[in-house]
Image: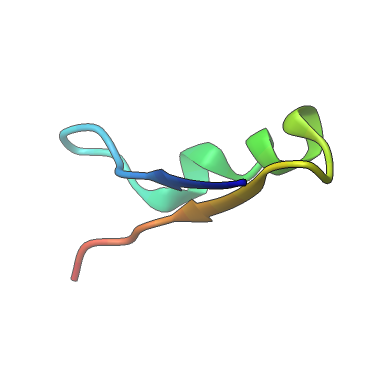
Length: 35
């Protein structure tokens, strides 16, 4: 499964870095970084 994460207002993709470890190998976390 692939999970696309959009950062909250004023946030960045770095917020979701730990999610990949916590969710395990069954979920691929794709964090989107706005330009």
